[in-house]
Image (cartoon, rainbow, N blue to C red; front, side):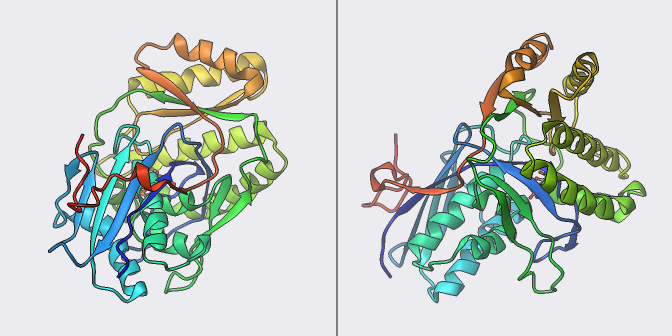
Length: 350
Ligand code: PMV
């Protein structure tokens, strides 16, 4: 086994039409297709991967902290290393070191950028030579939404219909250069870890929300419309579709028993303020969307940016904002940037 350390950078993606619910738990097959925009490197995860026979066990570090590989959540994510090891026909141990440039597990898709970077780096470290579609199928099995981060630009995760999941993979709708004046203003409202994981939350929603029954078919139609809006760079249509989808997502969450509440008062204030702005402007100039957390993603166009920034600056409780444009997807970076010490096979100190 070649013991080369490979480091990759991955970025999150923000879903415009969301994935929430699995039809199959083990392979992570979704109830509906979803569409996202991949972020630029404003938010990113750097991940170094090494396969070696010279350490006794696997190790996995996130932001300097060694993860417990017997923890269910971590185990499910790390399972993709096993999938890739099997494909490469090796039993070498893995050292994986990951660092986020933004808060972990606060609804900012840290798992997506982390898994995308891990899968991308492992593909190279194990010399598997897999393409984007194949890598998205592997990433999906670690965390569903992460599969969309394997490509840049605007990406659709096709739900697929096969039982083995071989057609539940991504397809790029438009490349990173397609829509250069669209931006996502990420408003950080809280950096605390979410109370209920998306994995657990969506399972409960599928199991007992009455309103959820209408969601998969509606989301499938919304994906078709969203794809058209992206291709035509029709911001008003995109904005309307994404806000409606976010509203629907949080409605089915609330309709779950026990209820799942990710939005807080600041999130709700953002929803009201954006809606008022659009009413005053008599057109959609800004559009919000929320994942499994209170932080807001407000999409707008460069020409409306100052207006939207001013609006947000008047909302109390927004801790900070960061802007992302459309990103290129994962990439391998220089060996010098590695997070693994090549002499100890442990996390680099300092
Ligand atoms: O892939 P997970 O288990 O982190 O689920 C993520 C679900 C949402 O972020 C809420 C929606 C989405 O499509 O990204």
